[in-house]
Length: 204
Length: 196
Image (cartoon, rainbow over all chains, first blue to last red):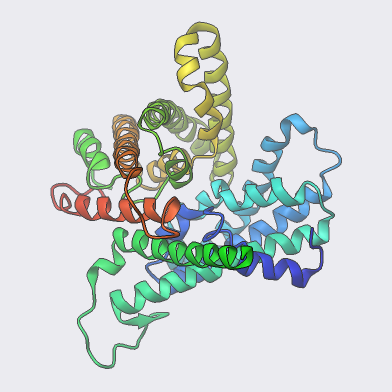
């Protein structure tokens, strides 16, 4: 298993991206991507929680009894989510209101639990923290790509700044739920078609 | 917050504010357990059951414990523990008293603890300040709506098993695109009721 921060970064950001390759953490990546601001805040919040909960759980991995580890993991994650929630309520009240229940739902985001189970449990704290951090940043990257497509076509803006200089008719469908499904579906399709091609090419 | 009739909430949460098609909750199990119609039905039933029970209990916990003690900042931890404990008790009770039902739904119960639809419905209920009957109907409608969506996807996926597909699309990408089309169809209902 790769333990160098750079190697972890590459796997988590590209080849094993949590959202597009592992299909984890889908709920929130569909829900918040109609605006780039929300996506960025959500992505950074999730990266913070994943990094610190991986760090904590990895540091505690020797002392957690195996049978109750799921419960302990959930509680540790919930503590960090409360930090994020209180921080957003205090400093970014508007975004906190728009994200609504999705901040609390970071607790049940499968990426965090997945990293805790698959990596933090078997590895020392510092690599585990990097692994969690980059898994979160990979998620942020996907969110920003999807949000860019949806916000430009749906509102004609980027981060709320108007870029619709040619004055085209914006597509309302882009900010509605179906577009999220189509865009993420197409991205997954493109990536897995590429992976299949590569695998077929390598076998020859 | 104006009082919306519980029955409007019930129908709206099935059709216009469907948990999956407009709120994107519970996607993980929705995508992974939808390749067979029969298993999808089992999971849908289990989700509906747990959803109604946890929402009612969480409503009582919020109203009579969290608000009087002013510990709103601990609500996530409390809700998650209620859900985990309830699922555990439900599994043990079912195993003891209803072995037939347990054989059918038992395997799905652990999955449900981490299903974000369960926590999501509770959080929506808190944010929208629902009363008891509103919460009850909201959770029942959300559960049935979730069940409806997973059954539709499973039925479509079963039919598509024999179809010839472009490379790379089978699996998750196809489910997403089917769900997108379903969500577009459900937009047709919007405007009948709104609860947001």
